[in-house]
Image (cartoon, rainbow, N blue to C red; front, side, top):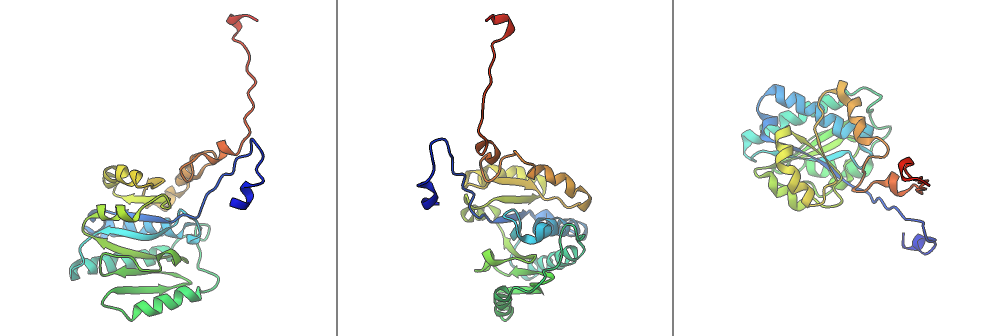
Length: 242
């Protein structure tokens, strides 16, 4: 970018949109019962599986309002299993299995599978998978997560995640809606660029396209407005005379 800037003529603007990462946030309501976990799992499948987790807006880490005791981790594992089933059931126009495994990510998964005191792992880098952290921390390789693999992280106090958010955090789906309303100011102050509901109904997926429509704000700016040269043809009002 510094090299390109030397060649910019007056009137030409360099619009920079750097790589971003996205997360999801789940309140304790997500683990209350089987119906809630099913709904949330479908929402996470869309948040991570849409575009095969290749977009900046794809969820990679999921912070869940939960304890780290055995009973809480058991519920997290149940949610993780439902997510895995949900991502397999996504229609092909939304998401598909990877054409080939990610060898580097596979090596990371194999390494933490042996650390079962700290992680629970299922799936692979072709069909997708889940990593459950048994403590309040994400995996060291969270930025490498792809091929529909997510890391579920329990947090007793969700406000802790503010310290891990910044202007590189793009999209944050939140469940339930009441939690989104409580957290949106704190997220925005840390630099998060897009806070949305977790859409769980696949039939409503088309409705989410309005968030990606051309001309809307993206990465904290209005790129379409900045990339257009504006010409104004202004006439006097008829009542103002010549």
